[in-house]
Length: 420
Ligand code: GLV
Ligand code: MN
Ligand code: MN
Image (cartoon, rainbow, N blue to C red; front, side, top):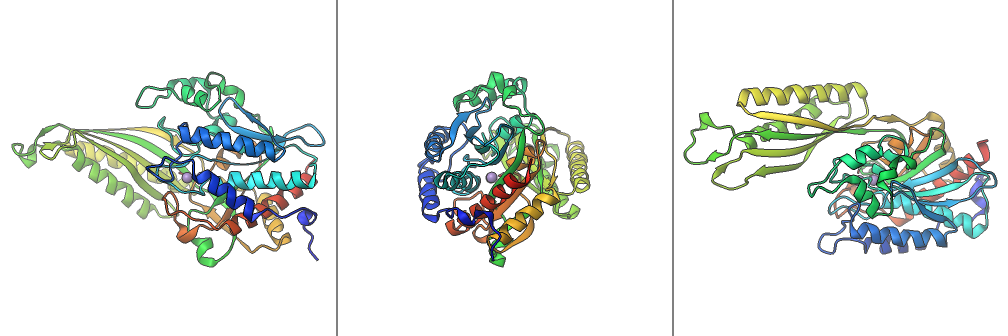
């Protein structure tokens, strides 16, 4: 006999979730599916859509100073909320599921509770965090960073994009209040538990044909902006020995990133995802290159080793080639071990609703990384086809999303019952 607390409630609906996914995929830049960058018109349109769905689900919608969209359902008693969150913003030409699956799972849980008239002991919130993906301000996970006290109003006023707009202004453009960003902060314990569902963004669940993953550890990004400054010269007249070619130096840097991640091992990965050369003309030796470098890992010692190797290697390339390489650390987030009791509770929830599951780790980072500063977190994955993500081909089956939402619902009910 099943011991599921959710047995008396309706099941998360595949049809409703499928309709939500279809509605959200329309909020894209038409020329570049599926692009809904944070702070864009498409982001604002998707937020407006979500406000309506939150209200229909019996949630009271609000926006905090960081622009986080919060739908709240009161509990029987006052006090901190149980939260399910993720994000609706996407990367350039990204997918239809990264982040979106988690917000929709939270929304569907709210709809199930509302349809059944089931009142929780604790308040319940569904959150669409502001700008989880990289922004033009050098930061990602902006909403969860602000909520967990890692981003303040002074920093938001200082950080600028290339057009000179401040992050604070961008936050204002989605209904937040950048100048009062600190008021989005919640104290440790100000959230009771944080839960997130996400597509795996790797191939293990899809390959094993397992619909749900219970995450035990989450990698964190360390990112650099790197400026290579050589000397612009004539491509015909300048002998090879006299060049200070910024692109040739950047090429060495790219291979350094790849080699360091491979050689360090222990799950380290390294990527140069952005590169811009100037003046970028066939008969000119490039004088300037800007790069963005992203290292990820779960093992703090391996991360430290890789970053040390990168900084030493970059200095060596600069000296040997007689040019300048300057790097600025943009982010150095901390990897996270998910509390064992949250892992066990997620597993017990999946078992109770009879959904096959397995443990795994996350190579991608999530708003959960920051929410962990406030309370114990739980992260549940569903498969994505061939492990592909951050690309237009990204795909997850809506049936898996509904199964993941069922696990979240059961997990939420168990937390609500067990926590004081
Ligand atoms: C978020 O998508 C990340 O970069 O891990
Ligand atoms: Mn992403
Ligand atoms: Mn994501």
